[in-house]
Length: 445
Image 1 (tube, helix red, strand yellow):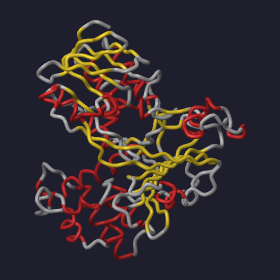
Image 2 (image 1 turned 90 degrees about the horizontal axis):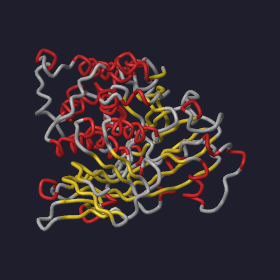
Image 3 (image 1 turned 90 degrees about the vertical axis):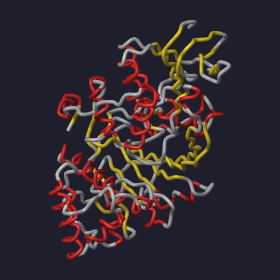
């Protein structure tokens, strides 16, 4: 271990593994260490015995739940947008050859105390029970405007500068109701709260276009895809990529201590009495607690069930977004469900998650609106963890710390953090203008 590296990466969470892979492809000499004896860090996947040990201690899971090895329960459950940034990153790095994906069946929104399929195109808007007849026409006109909008073609702007007018102003011009605005902003544009209404409309229009493009890519029931055997496969895939390009991996390295020189710049990492020298360190917040601050908590419920979520057309994999206004909250709540069809549970079993940014210290009552949508559950676990963001200045100490995972059930915010960290580390941007058809061999439709 007594060598010098360009970058030492601490922690094998998804963000750290993506960065390790990207930096290794760039030709940097990378050492990747983790205090745990498994990949994934906070974003790992657990089998049934591991899940039981984490939440129930020494108890053993009941036999009727099936074999432990048939479970892959994500601790940070998230779907991928089929046309989104993570998929583009997977293709850019050729990591798709290590993974198999399957489309997610459905995308739903909670509105007026019911679950509704999310309409994403002008034609779906006309069929949606979310809206009355006249509202459907107004929504259709808005969808047509968004679908035709081309940032480089002023003719499609219809005289509107979306970098200057707010989303609220754009929506007012189309006369949409509050209920329609709710599902557009939260279930299509995937905003986490209502702050976007007072921000430039361009971001919301781009997000809506990404949703529609992702949906069209599969011609299925949702814009999302998800890896077979769960998200635990992703960190390992990027770890393989790093190793192919010369990266060195060391798991089960206790007490990884980051060392600094007299100027306060990182100079190495010590573990078990050995020090590896380096120019830069990349890590999750747990490795440098003095350089982060707490920004909130995530509350999560994990359910094992023997049926699909009711009122979702018997879908085996879905996302339901519960917009903040529907629940009287400050931010959205998310329901994520997957099943044996994605090889994350034995045949006939379903795994559901209810997640939210915690606004109380009582996840059982706070998550009740989402849990009530699940129907009967076989087992239910509750989890709560703190979220942190870095407060250091990387240009002064050469420490690049990732932000904790949020409550959303999609990856767009996660990858934005990764790519901004990559730019801060290298001074370059990742070219993600890839041919998405190149991934077709690694996908199942």
